[in-house]
Length: 291
Image 1 (spheres, rainbow, N blue to C red):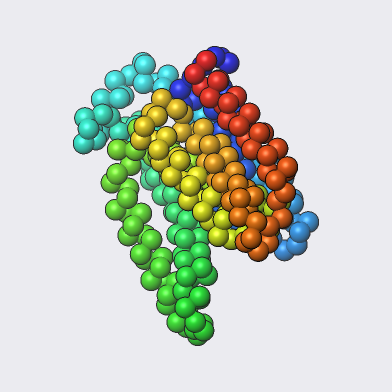
Image 2 (image 1 turned 30 degrees about the horizontal axis):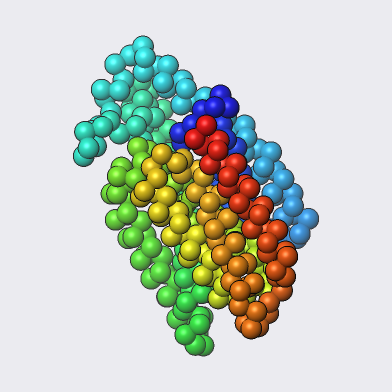
C-alpha cells in the first residue's frame, strides 16, 4: 500500500530503488566494464536497452520462485531442514539448494547445483575484476611508469587480495541483514548515492572541482553511516537518495562559498535553487517514510 513503511514500502522502493539502479547501471564499475566492451556506441545503447527490457521478466521469474518455495514451506516441514546461523535463525540463503537436495532426483541435483555455482562464479569474477581494475588504474599506475608484466602481476595480487577480503567479509553478512541479497544492496546503498552525485557533478557542474566533489562524496557516505547507526527505522533504500542529496549539495555549497578556488562554475542563484529542490525532495521522502 502507499502508506506502507519499512524497508520494502512503496515509496522507498520506487524512489530509493530508482536512485539505486541509476547508480548501479550508470556508475558501477562492474556494469561499466561490460558496456565499454561493446563494439560501438550503437551496440552500447542496444545492450542497455535489452538489459532494461529483459531484466524485468528475469527478476519476476526468481521472485515467483521465492513465492513457490514459501508456498511449499507452508505445506511441508521444509524450514526445519535449513541450517542454523550463529544467531539461532534459519539460514534462508540456502533455501533453494536445500530444496533441490531434498526433493530432486539424483543426476538432476548435480546439474542444478553446477548451475548455481556457475551463476555465482559469473557474478563474483565480475566484481573481483572490477575491484582489481579500479585498484590498478587509480592507485598502482599513479606511482610511476610500470611494465605490462609488472601491472599484470599487480592485478593478480590485487584480485587475490580482494578475494580474501570478500571471503572474510562474508562471515559478517548475517550481522548486516537476514539474507545475502539484502546485505549486498544495503552495503551498496551506503555508497550508491554519493557515487551517483560524483558522476552527476562531473556531467552537470564540472567546475565544482575534484576536491569539493570528493569531500561531498565523503560527507554523503558519513551521512548514510549516521542513518544506519542512529535511524534504524529509515529504510536503507532511502540511503541512495540521502547520500546523493548530501554529497551533491555539499559540493555545490563548497563551490559557492569558496569562489577563490579555481573552476567555480556554479552561480549562487543556481546553488540556491538546487538546495531548495534537494530540501524539497528530502522533505517528501521523510514525510512518506513517517506517514
